[in-house]
Image 1 (cartoon, rainbow over the protein chains, first blue to last red):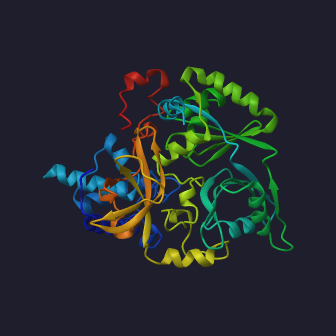
Image 2: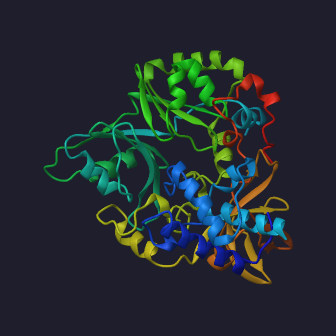
Image 3: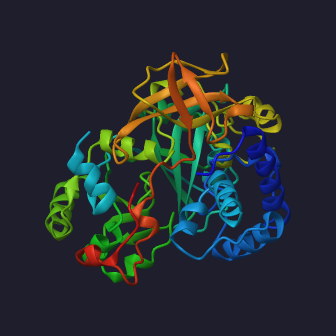
Length: 94
Length: 343
């Protein structure tokens, strides 16, 4: 995991929550999206179609492309794991 | 905790007796109204679908961990946490006067077995036929006199089997016999709980988590904001509307920490350990801490009486089930399939 200050992660979490509500049409207030809640299945209820939209939205919002590989499966689990992905992919690009 | 059972859970298949799960049925024309008075989550379940939720105390602390299964117009509740009698009292108290609904204790009728592991689906296909492989997560299907629910709380493929009591031993023996080809092991409640902890699944058996509410536990997703009329709603709704002040956070200490250990950041107390244990796959101590929200992010280094404690993103392992492709992979070919390491 690429280290980041709590303040930086808090900003990314807020951006991700907004993305999930606006782009994935989650009908909950932002604070209802817990950072370690499961994104798919029973948790926040996203499905495989949402996964595609999520990858596109992350590219547009954070400027990183979630790869279609083993890492992606682990990164797509929760908001916190997606933030790990953003930080890791940004660090790799530098 | 057994190393063999954990290996089976994480690499193959494990079978568990789920005697700690209480099975309750809610029957009748008004069954949905009764469920609505128990569960903090809106239910949109077609026949055979299931969802995870909670039963709350009036103060919004967690009373029971519940999976609700729709059975035509009726409902099955698979509950963990409270004693059976207390659970039935709460469920029966939700039946309104004159309503056509009945709460039945099904624990005498059904025994519950669980098949878990990255190749649980393959054993189940041998046991029940290949169609079972297509059963979606949180869906149930009837297999003659057994109800099979795809669920699980280990981070791996999981199937809960509701088996008539007089058939439990026979079904268990058959699964163990068929499971020999998968190096099946029996996994006890301690093994299941340890696996759940590694995956940040809630377990009602942790003493330190008793007295916490869904907002603190990161279980808001098991409730629908703004819903009213269920047990605990008056206390929970203000908590769901307000910003979180403290949050359950996963952390790795250098060595085991006691329950209640105070965690500090730059000398300032920011939280305490509310669950402590071992992550068996990681082979390292694991704690859950209730931390101030401002520091409850992964990657923060805290201090516990001179010991470094690093907050992390759960789960702390890469579950093999994430990478096992049911179309291409088989237990017998696992060595050649080059799946990612678990840690």
